[in-house]
Length: 230
Length: 166
Image 1 (tube, chains in turn yellow, red):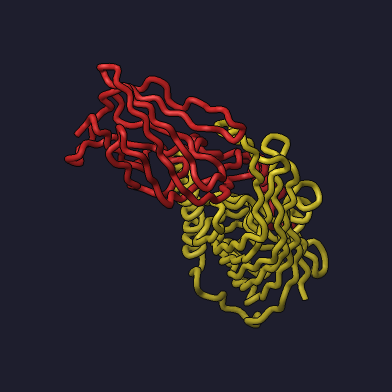
Image 2: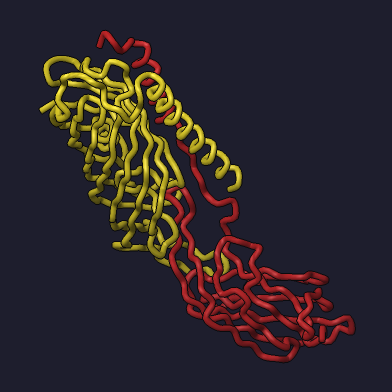
């Protein structure tokens, strides 16, 4: 357990260092918090996006999420964003443990991305950002066969229904948006997620948390977004 | 796309592939749930078993199972706890150095909670000890020290005092 904590701490430090590095580079280039002085208006519009990684996970594996986002473009530099999604896990009758885990719940994240490119108005963006996320969800867990008590030789059902759980978390991210044609952009983001607070019910832990991924104290993730400027 | 070199996209793509390859099964190393009895004298000092101890429990099918066989000079003993019996019964058979035998029964009442770690990990039950009582042939006292029973084997759930260790 101690070893895992040190790995988690290393990832935290690496992610924060990366973010600070980009902030520092940007600050040196032109002043991180200052808007570029030009004739471009502050409000540049909105963008809608849809994440394909979560949808692919949903299709190809036993957990994933459908997620969309609305992003505000402030002078091609700051991008306040709201991400909403529906996460789902349906792991049925694990071949080793015989456990079934099901949950479906909405989630949201709010945050901001900052374009760190020197030339901000080209339509292509390299950005760093952060998010706060929250979900409230219920889980059903059951074992397909009763547990066998080896000492007392009794068979005991293992069933947990509608266990109420919730989680607050934060994300640090690095991403790239590239203009393809017209209002269409494509973009990657890599994210480091860490839990701020969580309530896992009476049964100990949860496995899949909608919007966050598989349970852990921290996790890495990614999105591939189709983005349309409006 | 001209301002973003394709190598940047390639590196990021490979990084993301690597991320997706990172998964681990994180089950606890200790995955047995036992109650731990530490042996004390009446002065409240930890001591060792002076006699030889056997412990067994009756099963639902009418048979018995031996849980501890011929334990001696131990500071503590570990006993299993049932998944969902409301009360567990243990028979303590104590044989001293003169071959004199005392026989006691210990009843442990508890509340049981299903415990889940991950779909990859064995399901089990954790417990909250509600009460303990015993007969007093060779056992003087059994008291609850920590009522929470889970994977941690370092917990002292009970303090037990044997009459031979006054």
